[in-house]
Image (cartoon, rainbow, N blue to C red; front, top):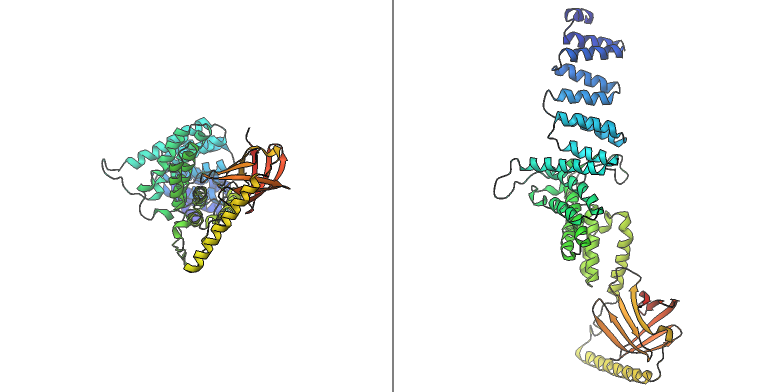
Length: 481
């Protein structure tokens, strides 16, 4: 019956398609391919012929030809460069740079306005070591996206609220352009790009945080967390990353307060925004936490907490670190642990009300006893002042740095030959003065107000000491030249 149909339709598209089916039944793949190609040549606008040739290429493992043929077929329905972009993506992942460039050249012919084409080209050019050309490609992608976003914007008033996906590619293009500028020391240019990325946030439609940003994916993105294939981040993570990058460059240029504002904005997009709120999901995958930012927010939490600790605000810093370790990059986990230890140490030495829980009579007696103790200590200091001695090699000015880089307890210790000392705490500008006596690696410091302090020292060399405070804090002391 099919042979009879072929005779009737000989020389037509239908005839070649029937012939191809018959050849496939007989496993004559070369003949079937030739018949399908002839059908397409006879009528290039035949959707049926184009579709069957695409399917044939795919089923016989000719994936590149399948993508190329699909690109031709889709043009009969609508303009799209998607098949050639898929082809270029695969070739880029195999570092087949020249083949990827050829696919992208075809993609540009299919749809010159698709900003993904120059963006993918930027990735390919970077991989091929042509960074200057890559920057041109990314700027082209950004220009196309900015033009697209302006097409239907009102001439005055507030800009339109858009789906977050509309901003994925321009944000990513800005990131790719800014990074080499930072490395080249062009901080102002990089700053402008990051500010532009942050500026998209107010233009995103309500509920934007949970949108999966497929539009921000580029061919060189690597899988995370042991995944087989890369997955898109949500919009909250992408925007938090923009705030984080902007904060870092502001900090590097000395604009500390502005940097903290950006770090705080990034941190507030992460788990911190749901502190104390149960995270709920269901079998359909619906959750109330799908809009939480990942690693960039956790990193920003660490930076804000660090600044709070530097100001001595341990309580707020502790709250800022809520679940910060969940998504924190591995290279920062050591810093998080050290910061937590610093906060624990600072909390342990915070002044406490020694009279708490006492009635008025007991409080009055305790205060009187305390004043007597201070007076006795002061008298002891005066007696010691006549006999106190210090080692000559310890005379000088020493800069004390805690062994924990997050402890804001840098101090300057001045020791004079007559056993006078002065200890200045830089974090709160407090000063202690008095007499010092040394015995067997121990510094006994009798403050002129009657307070007694003790520190232990050990020489590393002539100009370096290891000092341990009575509360257990260890310092490295270096002699000031």
